[in-house]
Length: 302
Length: 185
Image 1 (cartoon, rainbow over the protein chains, first blue to last red):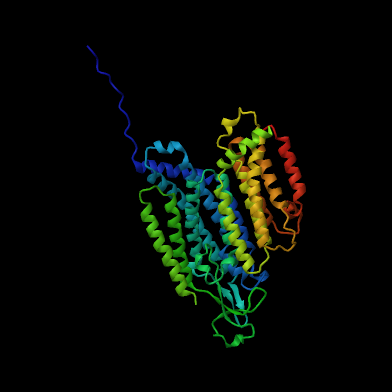
Image 2 (cartoon, each protein chain N blue to C red):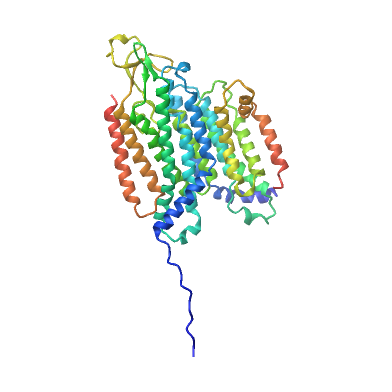
């Protein structure tokens, strides 16, 4: 006669939500130990504090410099995202207790504090500009001394934070080794920030990553009378790299549309890091936003 | 030994991940074209290219089969040299293309900064803990470049931070000596 074998009662499997929360908490703890974050943030703060309108290299350089002062922070955010998403490449993840979608969502949730960091940095930029009493833009007779970044220009740091996360996620998820990811991210963000003047042409600026206003629009030959231009225009005189008189075009609408473009681009990039289910929806939404953003910018630029 | 390395050239070239180099080169060449079109000097872009290309060359040392290949009669340093020759050759081609497009204020277009930064990165990769050696080594060139940008000019610290750019060959010599001392690692 056989005896029935008794098994000890097993604990029920944790819900996907509990696993996701635990993974997000774990990723967050790891992220706080990432050495690139203090490095990138420190460099961005140093850059922001070194901008002084009294020692400008050229008219308006401090206004322009503040728009791109966050790029080293964006590089650090991208690296943090890449490191987090690179863990998804570990083969053991196939046998994980929750599907990849939940894991991706958990990693994204862990990266949300970095968006808050980008937001805090944009608030700091706003405070710094007011502390300096505004920034000069333009050249006489079209010049102001108390220009401040508008709300959408400040929010660009936040939109760039989203883009940094998406860029890091896709490179971390799809590339084999971080040794190639980190230099690539450095190159992308350095080219986007330090070389912002490459993308200042009205045809190129809608596609730029870091949009630095004002946009230069040539309005007359070098012998034109600057007093003949409308009084409210900010002007740029002819110079070494400029053939005629230019209008320095600053627009909140342009900055809003650019932020929409950045969000669309972020969704397109994130789609490449996303698991198969749901990827098409992200791609479609991202493409719509990106196209809308570009078209909107072209409508605004004179 | 040379025959063994020659036979290993093609398989090694196949396993190196080339598309980071291709992507970086495309970005650099696009930026160089825009810079050339606007008649601006290319000093900073060339310095950035030095750092990025050097990082990617060091990154090419990543060998997923490193532990598997340890028993073979070709040393780890020889396998490193083969990878460096392949990736370094590609980087020099990109560098040559960039110098055709850009003009810098000195007009030298020397390849020294790329060699110096890559050598320092390799030396760090040789001596760093094996688990993350290549990663740390690949980050070093971009960090050195950033340091040179961040430190204000005029002081001794800025001079040291810019040594890879101002005196690249002594820096490369010291780094290569460190690599030689670590040849058994």
